[in-house]
Length: 560
Figure 1 (cartoon, rainbow, N blue to C red):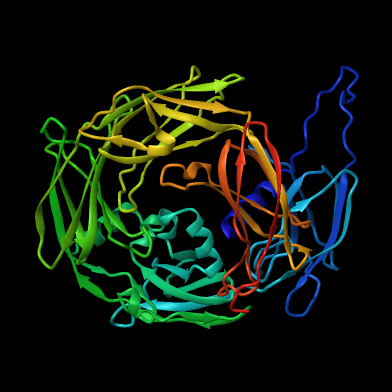
Figure 2 (cartoon, one colour):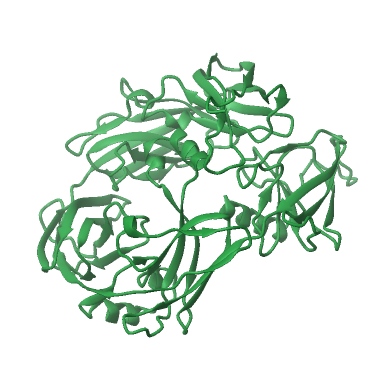
């Protein structure tokens, strides 16, 4: 969420967009515009209630497929702000200030926030943001002899909170896999010093990695080659200087606290991993990219790579002992993607016999059909493997102006269909490969072939579901509402939708594909380690052009 807020703050500062309406030759609008709104309030410190001058406050339109309206202001010496001439819409509303944690409107502790819905002519007065000062971890990284180590990547990792884990669980097992979240990254300077800032209160694991320097652009190619040819390497370590994550010690942080975490790195013996990559016809695969990933890594930032030569041979140096996934990929002319992978155990001896063989894979041809309107431009069609451990995926393509598309090199496997870049109001009505319903049974590729043409039917005639969420007979602002297809399968998760309630506890799903849904609401607690309060699920069946309403009531957890 922090990365999202920073990104949209940049958008706001660059330009606050406004609505465009038809204009007559006289220069006057041909449409009567609704009365604009205004929002006023104050930004203060959470600890003392002191005003925060020069804070940035922004409203970003929600439910916009592209070019959302944005309105912003900067606080004065009293921490006050006023945003005028705001178009009545539904907005994300938040405040930021250097050295403090960005905060959304009516957030509960460090969690979530409430959308702000404005009706024509509405004036919102007294909006208050209490910003928590960010915590800091500083320290020094040295080698075995105590010499400072420069250009070492240092990362602050934290375990996902109960609320975050619950939200990831809604998106399925592939989302649940990431339980450690990268929250801040820094490079050590020439003194070996680093500084990780803007951290929320909580516990963090600090990781130092020499290979991060190249990924962050702080190490040139010659230095990288030299490091990987030495035969030894500084292994990534966790505070207080251990290689295994289960031996790491968390660093607890309070709001605004600055804690020092120093540790040393140590070299480990590394080996060479070499082998060959073969094309589908058995000939050498020249120019293929070979990647070596740590299996079950804390994150995927640590990897080694090499390219095959004219004989299809590759060699990766500087590989520490451990469990890895080695993969090879290549893009042929015409867009065909070749892929191969296998698991690899690396010990203390060189490995020179790794063999990866490409298969041609299947070619999936299809077309986009639109119901009641012209075909949307450049729709992205993607096949995602239903297996968590499968890195291959199924490939992706953009549709052509006539709606046709072709995805090359889809490896054998079981895939779910995902369709992206649809304009607001559009949804996938059906997807069939011959007689098979791909939204129900997925796409199965066997022996490098798929028969038939995949027809994806898009429609803009969906259903609308809205309603309200209450908590102890009061509107529950900031609740997360989930509409999950019923029954839910690996292949229909594209139809899973979520929405956040506004200050009135109201939520809206503007375009849902017709069908049956199980709808629930969850409200994060003020404590990151306390489970969210949830409502009893309700099942609704929606048809085309349906407009139904739903009332959800949050239940008090039994532990209370």
